[in-house]
Image 1 (cartoon, rainbow, N blue to C red):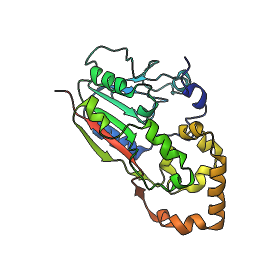
Image 2: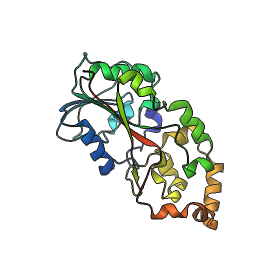
Image 3: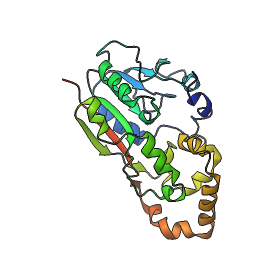
Image 4: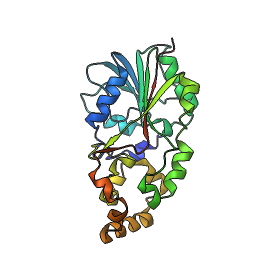
Length: 246
């Protein structure tokens, strides 16, 4: 069965460039692990250089977009990893767990093939206060339906450390809440097209028309303009790090 990113992933890599600050945080969390598996690897963003890494990606379209210099990739799902137990020093999965059909099974598989740390970037569905949710209420419902709660990870990975992943105001990676200081970006259909939530909610044209009106009138800045002076912000993204099983 084709993966949904075979359709929505076309042109994905333009607005979705890895941000070096986020990349540095992920690389630091992986420590000195050399043999790494990256689940839901997409086009290769956030894969640390100088390691022995295997990418796992279910979408042929996303694999096609991996540059020639990228690490090798196998087309497979998180729920059925084609590797032996303890094959890798560490595992990573960046903004992908919510797309898995069986999240518990995917995490068990990731733990099975990894003898060292597991590093995840995800979103906390209990986080509230993002101004975009006020314009598009369906986002909170969507997050609650597809994002695991934070206590979910320890059930399948063992003890975890969970910390906020602060998002810089000029983040290069155009994921959903990365434009928290640049509201005009949500009016750009090219940028929205690289965000899976807009595909899931059907585009949100009516809701975005209200945002456009408030930006034009100055109402958005009257309510949220203080954000334009912030350098980074907690908008709900979390770094989840599980130590090795031993």
